[in-house]
Image (cartoon, rainbow, N blue to C red):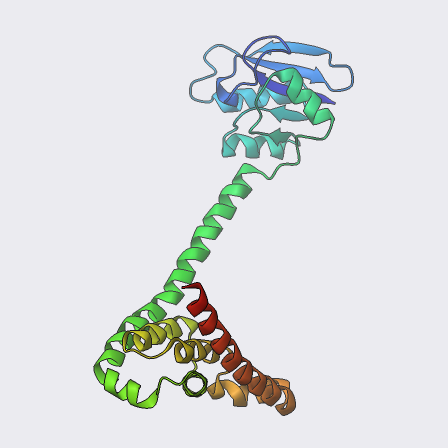
Length: 255
């Protein structure tokens, strides 16, 4: 197979040129024998239309692969349309590049335009995710204000007695009934801690808020069956109390 390598000099030990459009030579190398021909790129090829002239040069000399440090997306597309594989991000000497390609260590790379499309797609998805999360964040800010306004420390301390098992049980009931977005549970938990509620209760609230959710139990029964839904809910409720007790005790030991 004949490979065209963008090179800085007419020699196999020359470095692979960083940009295809600026290379002074194309080395046409046979992978089986390493025999090569150095083809000078026409003078002035670095200006406008350089890429197109280089494409024509590669095609005219029968190369099936082009190796360079960088190939612009438009030129890469034209090369691929003519059945030429484009291998980029290659350094070192032309000899090393050809040997690596022959061993299967180069080539079959994701097209540059595909990588750019993937990046744009990722940014688009991130923007959509942020847009979907923004109402939740806004709700969290409003929830903090409402919680601090209407739920005073005296009210909370009258409910939570300071007894670890009882606090964990009350917190688990509280979290199970008021289940919602996980982000909100952290806000509620922080407000409870600030009001002097024990870590036992706060941990139970956060756990049951996310894992139990009595509000969604009818939908869960409809989708998964009453036996499974009720068993899962009861198990999650009881385990939340146990985990809350163990977590708070462990934090106390490590503190």
